[in-house]
Structures are given as C-alpha cells and as structure tokens.
Length: 508
Image (cartoon, rainbow, N blue to C red; front, side, top):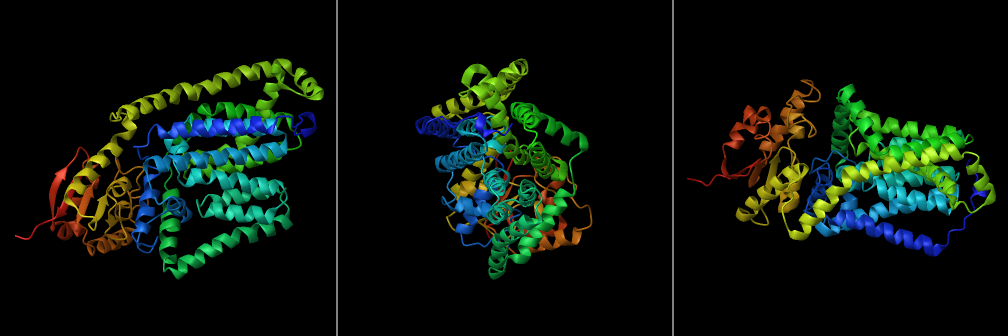
C-alpha cells in the first residue's frame, strides 16, 4: 500500500519543526554525555585529519586504509575533539533524520516522514556507540546512501550516480549504493548509463587529485590492496551469524515494521526487498558483521518501516482519512498483534543501552573517570599521552606500535613516518591483534611487510608508544629482529597499564 491518497499530508509545519528541534536536542544530549571518550572507530580519522594539518599528504606521507573524504569531514571542524566532535556527530545524525523524513514524506505523507526521522534518531542512539555515535565510513555513508536511492526513485540517475560516487569516496562499499540506485531505477539500462557517468565524476576527480599529490600508488596499496586482503580473511561463519542475529534482535522493530510494509505494498515489494538484500550483501563483505558495518541496512529498513509504523498508528485512531481508517480496521487483529510486537521490540534496545547513557552522563557531570570496560584502552591511551606530553615538545614526533590513533589525538604530535601503527608492519589487523599473531595473508606478503619495517627504521621518532606488546606478547615489538638495531637507540621512559613509552636514549 504505497498509496499517498489514503494518508493525506495534514500535519502542520509547526509540528514538524517542533519534532525536529526535539530530535536534535535528544541526539545532542546522547552525544554530550561522553565528550571525553574517543571511540575506536573515530579516533583513526580524527588523528589522520590532525596529521593532514601537520602538512602530511594521505597515502603518500601517511598510511591510511580508508577513502579520503572521511578525513575531509574531520577537517571541516579542524579535527577538534570533545564537545565540537560530539556536536558534529549530532548535526550529522540530524541530517540523516532529515533525509529519511524527506524520502518517506515524498513516498507517502508527512506522517511517514516524521516517523522515519524519529526511527533514524532512535536507532542512531540505542545501539553500540561505535555504530551510532561515531563519524566513521559506515556511519558517514548513511546520508549519501539515502540521497542516492531517493534520487534514483525520483528518476534522476545522473544526480544519484554523483551521490553514490561521493559515498564511494567515504567507503568502498559505496559500490553497493550504486547497485541499489540501479535497482530503484527498475534496472533501466539508460538509467545505468547516467548512473555510471555520475558515479565516475567524483571518483575520477579524486584519482586526479591523488595523482597530482603523488599519492595514487599509496591509495591503491592501502585502500584497495590492504582492504581486499582484510576482506579475504573473514570471521568464522558462526561468529558472523551470531553478530547478524544480535543486530537483528536489537533492530527487530525496524525489521518487523519494514516486513509489514512489504506485505501490504505488493507493487513496490520487489524493490524494497532488492534494496535490503543488496545492502545486506554490502554489510556481509568480509563476513564480520561488526556493529558499524550494519549501518548499511538502516536506510532500506527505516523508509518502509515508517509506513509500517504509520499503519499501526492508524489502528489506534491516528488516521485522518476515512479510507485509511477503513483499510486499517479491516486488519485490526493483525495490527493489534503488530502493535504489541513493536512496543516490546522498541523497549529492548532502550533497556539494554539506555542506562549506559545515564551512567556516562552522571560520570561526566561529576568529573569522575569512566569505568566502563569498553573505555579501558581509551583511558590507558589518555594516561600514555599524559606521560609523553610531560617530556615532549610541540615539535616532537611519535610512532605507535599497536593500533592507538587516540594517542596521536591526545598528544597532537606528528607521526615520524608514513607508518603510525603496526598493522602494515605485522600484517595483523587491529580487530584481532590483541589476541592473535597471524597475518591476514599468511606468508605471501612477508617481503612487503619486511620492506615496510625497513622503511620505518629509516625514521627517527622522538617517542615510541608500544601499546600492543603488553596485551599480546606474540606481537612484541622486540620479536622482530630487523627492528632490533633501530630499537637499540630507544630507552624506556615510563609505562602505564597497557603501554610502554620509549624515548630516544641520551648519548653517554
């Protein structure tokens, strides 16, 4: 039932403005309760933006395995952290709400638009912070994802292609956004041509810029070679299924309402399902199903779910049109059951994640340290950065063994070389190197990794922060013989719970 004629647009602009003001206030409050925490999926991009401000060029002077627009987003607000970063996150989430609202309003009515905005805000709050709070590639791609599909539905394939191309410059999974736009254009080959042209324009411009900066080879190596190697080393089947099941359970209200819309909307059902299946394929790349990867499923569920929720609201007497009431009354029993299911499934994420916001807010207000286990490594990085700042100067340089970009954020120091973490030196990615020592490509790239370590030894950082060896002795920095002569020039200065800080030895 995509029928806008059954649901007139009778909600006034004042109601809309008030709702959007309330949504922004709620989004902002959810983010300001932990301004002193840096989550693992945002510190990397903030630190990279800081390195750009130090004069480095991505891919040429700095190893960075994500597309370039992520750093550009952080550069928009000077790579600032704290309150500025959280306000930026709230503004971005609010823009996602606005895009979802516009799409659903044009499909049905303003009622669905307000529901879509509310659903977007709800699910950009109540899940793991790494998937709802941070500005990282999967989250940042939600906005162009929505607009690209909307423009495709509007039969504007060229514009949709441009927006999908921008998505690609945020996340290599932007190729799935292009596929979704093609599906919403009903697989028209003429539309495909215009989509392709639009898609190529921003990407070609990006490649030209990289070439002029001498960074194209590094971009191919870091974003594509490393990315494909990472994707080619999936998690276990059971792990992937469990993570997908967990995400679905916490987003069950979206899934149920979206499926109800599919059921009633026979005309658009194939497109709704196609959009969702393609998005699921994008989230499934690498079979990790990490919380942030699942952001790709939010747009194709939020839009139809807004209509599913509208049907339930109508069953409670909120329908403003006689034909719409008649439609819902004919399905009264089903809608009552659906209403109960939606109420219960919306409570699940609130009960699971809501108290954490209250605890964080209380700790932040009191100035008390956060004791949440998920913030332990961030607290340790804070401590390590404090040690370094006591004995460094603003012109000191740093290298971090492990994956601790937040140490760069907290110290504001420049990276001493192209390598600023250990992933391209050991071949073990950050999502597993705390407990594993197996390179993602076995021994096939041993020479490449050795060349990277040799390049590192030609740099002379003032400080080395070893944030990995105490967690995983199998990846202890001293277990690499080719690094031994270089490390001989460094002496331990101090250590925290999880980090050893070295500084260049004083001449005797």
